[in-house]
Length: 270
Image 1 (tube, rainbow, N blue to C red):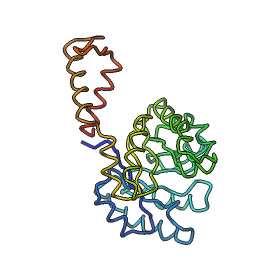
Image 2 (tube, rainbow, N blue to C red; image 1 turned 45 degrees about the horizontal axis):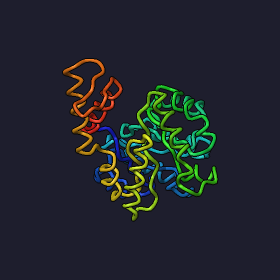
Image 3 (cartoon, rainbow, N blue to C red; image 1 turned 180 degrees about the vertical axis):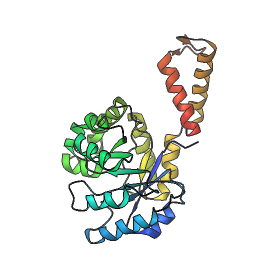
Image 4 (cartoon, helix red, strand yellow; image 1 turned 90 degrees about the horizontal axis):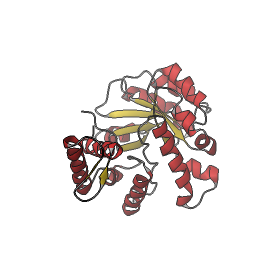
């Protein structure tokens, strides 16, 4: 059974020793970053090191975040890594149009994940999310988006967050993971932020340090109370078809049952 990813650990592509450690740290997906984490003079080295590392399938799922498609390194990134057997998906930063997704999908034939990091990307969120069957997910890049919008208060991004969640679900994609929490020491703040993200419909989160992983997983896995409620609902629906009322007075219909089944599935990580 392949677990549903809740943790996505970003590691710099020009630090192969750090990548090797990340593969064993328990993240559901390791994302090798050729973009923001790598200085321009080290792009070629990062690309070559990543190609060497992923010539064989690693023990966990590995995605590669290539450079933005308008950047001078993007085409070389795609040529170097798209066909590697160790790559489970390509993450495309700063996507602003569905045409970008279609072009990369048709050129590479790989599973893609689009990062929306600008006002234009948010404006085209659903068109991007539904652009091609190779696109498996969308998510936010909040640092760039915050700068583009001039937003200072964290709550100022909530409309954009909800927009991306709705776009993903409307396109039939999984709920998106949250963007990174940049302060690796602030674990309490991370937990609170994850709780808020969960309330908005996100599922899982990107991380930049292994110490963030258990906080994210704990925040997004169902609680014992949620599991108990889900089991009660599913059991009641199995015994009696159609809409029904539970002994505690809660009304249960098909949508509530489906949500309960998703909770149980998430607990099993399927």
